[in-house]
Each structure stands twice: as C-alpha cells, then as structure tokens.
Length: 438
Image 1: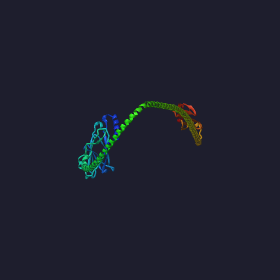
Image 2: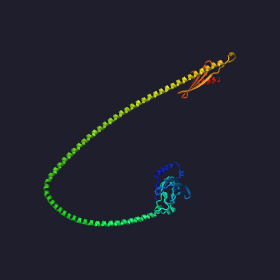
Image 3: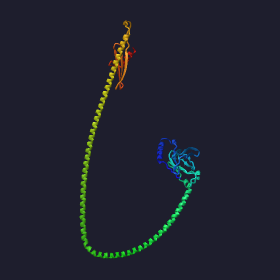
Image 4: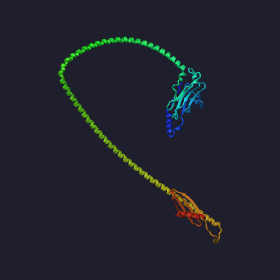
C-alpha cells in the first residue's frame, strides 16, 4: 500500500500571503480559524474505485461528512484546524480502514490554509499476503503538523512494514536463495580467476626474467658508448676551445642583427597601427557628421509635416464651423417659414370664422348694444439650434393683431418683443395678462 501525499505549496503560499495582509488590518483577537482541504482518490488494484464510502468524524464524537467516491474514485472535503479527526473508509468486499489527522497547531499558526492530497488503496478481505487484522486495530496513516505551514504523514508510524510482513518474508527468502546461488557462482568464478591469474603470473615471471637480461645487455652497451663518447669529447674539447671565441663573436653579431630587424618590424607595425587609428577616427568623425546632418534633415521634415497637419486641422475646423452656421441659418429660415405659414392659416381661419358669424347674426342697432370684442389668442413654441422661441398672436375682429415673442437663448438670457420691437419683461407679462382677462 503506497499513499502519495504532498502539500500544494503554490496555493498554500497564496493563502499565507492573503492571511498576512489580513492580519495587518485587524487585531490578533479577530483572526479567522484556518482550515485544511482534503483531496483524496480511492483506488483498488491501481484502478479508481467508485462507490466507496468516506466518513469524517471530529474529536471522536461528531460526524461531519459521509461521502461517496465518484466514477474517478475522487472525493474532497474541508475541515477546520484545532481538532483531531478520524476518517473511515469502506467499500463492498474490501477491508474497512481508517486514518487519523491531528490538526492541532500553535496559536500563531491557526490561520494557515494547507491542502492534503492522498491516494487511498483498498484491499479485498481475503487478499493474500496482507495482514488484514491490522486495519481493524490501527490506522494505516497518521497525519501530523510539520511545524511550518502544512501537514505530513508521521514518519515513525511503520504500518506498511507490518501489514505486508508475509510478502516481505517471502521476498527475503527469495533474496537469500538468490544470494546463496550468487555466492556459489562467485566462488566458481573466483577459482577460475585464480587459475588464470597463476598462469598469467608464471608468464609474467618469465617475461620479467627476459626483460632483466635485456636490460643488463643494454646497460653494458650504454656504458661502452659513454666511455667512447667521453674520449671523443676530450678530443673535441681542445678544438672547441680555439673556435669558441670566434663562435661567440659571430653569435653576438647575429643576435644584434636579429634585434635590429625585430625593432624595425615593431616600428613598422606601430606606424601602421597609428595610421589605421587616424583613419578610423576620421571615419567615425565623418559618420557622426553625417548622422547629425541626417537627424537635422529628418527634424526639419517632421516639423514641416506637423505644420502642414496643423494647417489642415485648422482649415477643417473652420469649414466645420461654417457648415454648422449654414445649418443653423437653414433651421432658422425653416422655423420662420413654418411660423409664417401657421400665421397665414390662422388668419384665413379667423377671416372665414368672422364672415360666417356675420352671416348668421341678425342686424341689430348699434346704439342698443355696447360692442367690446374678445381677442383671439394663438400661442406657438419653436425650439431652435441656439434658442427657444415662444410666440403669442393676439388678433381682433377687423384685422387688428399684436404679436408677442419671447426668445430664450442657450446661455439662459431671455429677450422680449412686441410686434418685433424690444420691450421690458414687466411690460410683456402685464400686457399678456390684461389681454387674456378680456
């Protein structure tokens, strides 16, 4: 049984960062309790096991969860720190198991949010070479706090070694037999190797004796050659004594000539390097001059382009303003035309009404009645581009008519007119009020 466990360090680090910032903002007494997320996978024979039951019990009494693994054998839950938990596992035909989680941590670590990931293997009740009785008595895993920010399996809990005891013994016997067979084979190979070494030792001894004889003969020849060489050296020494002075002088002369030739080469090389340096400096100066000229030319072209663009934008703005004014005048003319057409229609209707009323009324003596006709009032409102116009037309029988107009401009100022003559606001409202009472 192998349980794979690791703490998701990346997610835990993010939670630790968030917790650190949170603790800087509130008092320590208001710190939230941390929790642990448990991610498990139930397997049987290295295949996911669906339908297994997982029960989580807190502090030995409170059952928190009872889960069923999905098709992929996975399950997960979240439990608070500061408690001890027992997690029971069961599945049809498999040995019931349980594990213990001790999530009690020091107060300064109560805010951590680690993850625990485990693979839980299930075994059949009659599985060979498995001591199933241990599952009923002991937990197969004990989880403990690692002293930092996570939890890990208790390394001192050697449950796996005991549950597979029979298998380990069979393996041990097989290993012992294999070791015994290997020792016998090794002894046989060592005996053969010793025989080969004895043969090689004898051959090596004979070879060494032959080499020693050859060395002795070579040493004799070397000593003879040395003696002959010494004799010859004594003969030539006298001759070299006479020639040594001439040789020395010739050698000094050749050395002097070689030194002069070497100095001449160094001087020539220095002059060539100096010429190259001057040429390179001149080239760099010309290149810098060319770069400055190019930059100045580019700057002038950019300024010209910017000036042309500013002129184009200015002309475009002027044309836009001209178009706006043209539209404004068009709207004003249209409004004036509409008002004039409306007035013509009103006048025609008034004339027609007066003519019909004259035909229907009997002729009476003027002296018998006092005639005080009521005016006809027509009010129209015309919203414009820059101002809103309210027009009031007061007309009497016989063709008399007064036109009152109030123009309110977009900046909030209102101008008043009577028959196209500017009047005061007080006069405007007083005359309208007096006419409307009649």
